[in-house]
Image (cartoon, rainbow, N blue to C red; front, side, top):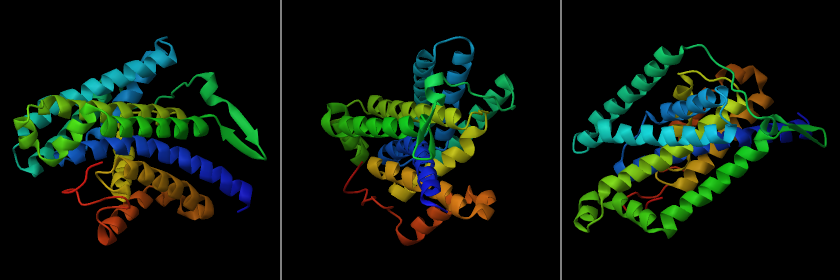
Length: 297
């Protein structure tokens, strides 16, 4: 493989990793606060992509369609917590896990019934489909915009968590929910805010994924969501920066390994789970993970 091909694949890998990173942040935020692996998170990503597609296909300007998709995804995430998770907050964790899987199946089948299971092409605006040529490399605008947006959203998320009173409340809630309630903080509102933040980021990641791989269907969130979960564990579940780092590593590896060894192309989806197994075996806290009894996010 020559250097230009390697650089081309590296850029593509970083772009794919950015999408995983946006979704992985949601897993990390919810787990950091509730110790819950929200397996419906990938399907909330699907909801965001579908709403953006339907709105844009109906004539709504792309930018407004994206805002609408983010709002609907946030509402979906909040309702998921209020209806399915909140009543079980004091139940055994296995009950929450089973409920999360049930919500995932519900969203998939709901959209399958409403819109059918046939993949649909996502028509992105022209400025996102433009192609740049640089020293022999073919660079779609998306592979430049997606990592840039991901880094901006990462800094915004970290700023909220570390520099605002709501972020302080989120970090406090992650340590001890009963004590935080005794201090007069509305824990339910803060948990709602966490679900809203994670769902908004998932929606943006889903829209970018639909644009980069211009096909959406009700089951698109399954494998992407599981890979994003693997990225969160790889980077360190409970660490926002680690989730982004894990997403970049996973996306880069998935693209570059297949570029070096095309015969493994059929196994590219397995790389995420190989990483997951190795991390759990040798460093369960992940690359940037810390003792969750001492640190959050």
